[in-house]
Image 1 (tube, rainbow, N blue to C red):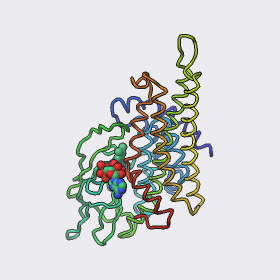
Image 2 (spheres, protein in one colour):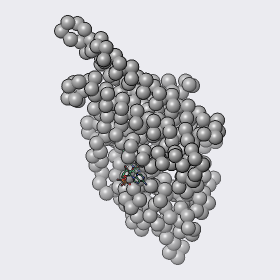
Image 3 (cartoon, protein in one colour):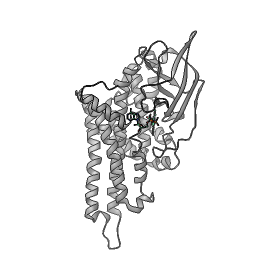
Image 4 (spheres, rainbow, N blue to C red):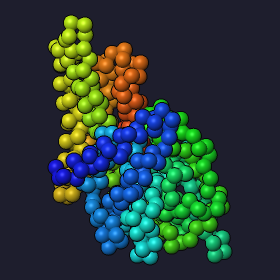
Length: 375
Ligand SMILES: Cc1cc2nc3c(=O)[nH]c(=O)nc-3n(C[C@H](O)[C@H](O)[C@H](O)COP(=O)(O)OP(=O)(O)OC[C@H]3O[C@@H](n4cnc5c(N)ncnc54)[C@H](O)[C@@H]3O)c2cc1C
């Protein structure tokens, strides 16, 4: 593992962890964490060097999110969405578009979000109903996106929409400043991931310029399957591996510090030792499977796609298992919310519903393993 993971752990401990509690308590978007992320120019992690960015790739994306999620799942998720959108632009955008937007991302001026999901197609975010239409010389985007993490805090959105000149899909990069964009409600009141400010986004008669379409007409689905999807699915594996590691570290420390009247500690109980061993094993396996799946992508392993999906399924399940068992070890103290485990359990439950949901992904993995088309 390169030093980047350790470096990012240090960064997150200092600049993200101090805000995690208030982010959850107040369902507050991680503005302070993002200020630090922008100041350190980590928004430019995936921006090529020629546009002023760090020029890093898939593995470093995974490492950084994993490190952030060790301290705050919400910050890691918002950052992940930003990276996914940035990478799509950097990979498929025209030179003109890249020159306009990437340097601002690289120097920490702006951040991006992913506006894909719609109520009409739910977890299948690669089947949008939102439409771009052409009237005389102008293009208009109309529709509603159902969940947009970072919503009003982002500056640009990666939006998938039905093409105006093609049967397929297009990805667009859309500025928040365009007239006709509103958010349905500003307060996200999720069970977990409480600071991610995710809410519906309305686009009504939004005038868009064709230059903001990413790539050739109708190439959106291919971009989703080959670029957006792998970075996104891997990113979720990293977020929820980080949640599992956080719960493991927290409960191990608690079990050593929880003392009884006879001076014995919680961790002296053999059953607790067994539970802790199981928790550590699961959290660590989520981390290493996630990192090695990311490596297999970089190394163009033929099994890379299957590995990425499996790592996401693995991390999603193990995060819930680890947090549930940690709640048991934490006893009434954990249940009374005097430990952070209950927050981590709430956060972990988002993994199974985030698109493509774990049920959908399980089917995809079965298809991929038997050489069938995924969608
Ligand atoms: C914390 C959080 C942050 C999010 N952030 C974003 C974001 O930034 N951008 C974005 O675009 N979206 C985002 N989403 C939306 C998310 O990715 C999903 O699209 C959304 O949760 C789907 O919700 P739904 O109620 O429409 O699910 P539904 O589609 O109604 O699904 C309900 C259940 O049915 C199951 N199901 C549906 N179809 C199938 C099938 N074919 N096979 C098996 N099971 C199936 C699903 O697995 C799920 O368990 C976010 C969601 C959460 C929870």
